Image 1 (cartoon, rainbow, N blue to C red):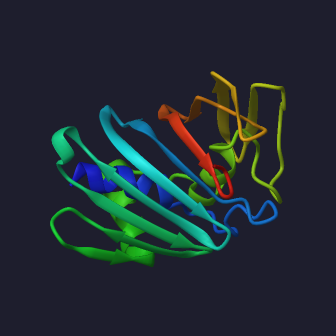
Image 2: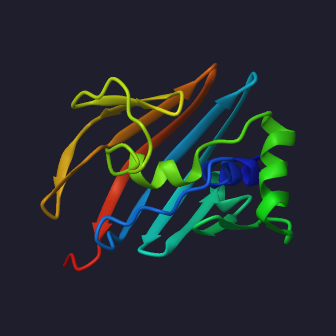
Length: 177
């Protein structure tokens, strides 16, 4: 159940904005994600597929346990949990609120993960390796060049004792050989 919450936390925010649309930026990213909230910590491996019209994220624990899949397009959200349950929209968001007492910024993560603030929202204290947006402080590190793009190797978003850490290990952009 906790792995399902990691997935929902990654995608099930209260804030509703369109997914990343930087000229149809599409990518595949693999790595690890960890969540710390209300004295609880969860870690999972992930494969993130970002499309121009949405996102598809697979998460799993050690030895492939707890495989969970999240699909989002705009405000629509679907979570397929390891036990076969399918949660949509508000049910997915309610799971996050129930298990962790918060809703994380889903649409924001699609921008943050490529190392930039989300468009259409105010940005505070912007520097080359950090920014603040909607009350979240986002720190970027471990930058490298992939397919002509500067991308972070690590994204840490924190707010009021909650922290989401995303390790970005394997980047591949659409059209990349």
